[in-house]
Image 1 (tube, rainbow, N blue to C red):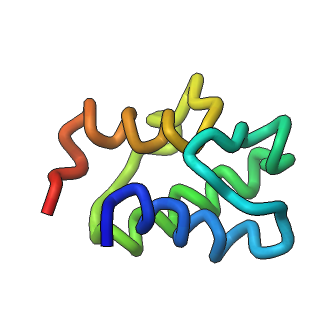
Image 2: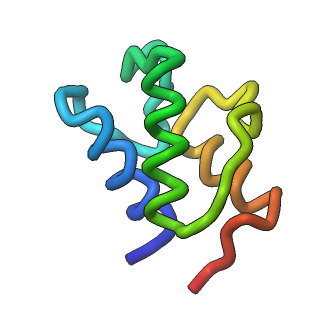
Length: 80
């Protein structure tokens, strides 16, 4: 399973009643993610990847693809 797929699955576990989640989905505009859900998403990603993510790490993130890029840029994720 790719990192992108794992991230989307983690988001789906938190946002189960939202429309289809893709890499291009915008967190606020398309998925209506609020601040509490952002924290739940961070927690789900921490569980999925067995790591710790600072709450402010996603500042400025607008799309699911941005999450992938932020995690890769920070070195928190490595391709399997």
